[in-house]
Amino acid sequence: MSKSANEKTGKPSRLSAKMQRGNLFSEKCPSREVLKHVTSRWGVLLLVALLGGTHRFSDLRRKVNGISEKMLAQTLQWLEADGFVERISYPVVPPHVEYTLTPMGRAVGQRVESLADWIEGNLPKIMAAQRAGADAR
Image (cartoon, rainbow, N blue to C red; front, side, top):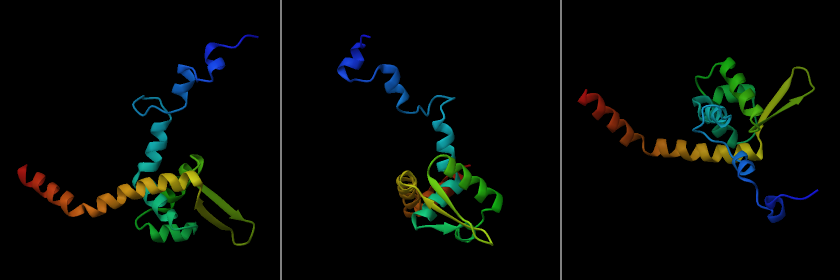
C-alpha cells in the first residue's frame, strides 16, 4: 500500500489541518456552543470561582450571588460536558458532591479571569462611556 505525499512528509493534509481547530465564524461549528458555555454570565463566574479551588454545589451558589439552582446545575453540566469541570460524587448519606476544574478548565478559567479583571479595572471608564452614550440620546 503506497503512502500519500502528505503521509511521507509527515505534514497534515489541508482537510485534517482544518479539522484540528474550530471555526467560530461558521454557523454550524461546535466551537460556538463551547464559547457560549464559557462566556455566558454564569460560565465566566463559575470558572473564576472554581479557580479558587474545589467547591460544593451550595458553596458555589453562595459565592455566585444571583444564580438560581437550575442555572447553576445547568451551567455546571455544560462545563463538565465540555471537559472544564470535574464532578466528584462521594457515596455517603446525605450525598456529597464537589466540583473542581480540570487542567483544561484551569486554562480557560485563567483566560476569562483576565477578561473579568480587565472589566473590573476599567469599570469607571466603561460607566463614563455608558453615561455619555445615554446623555447623547
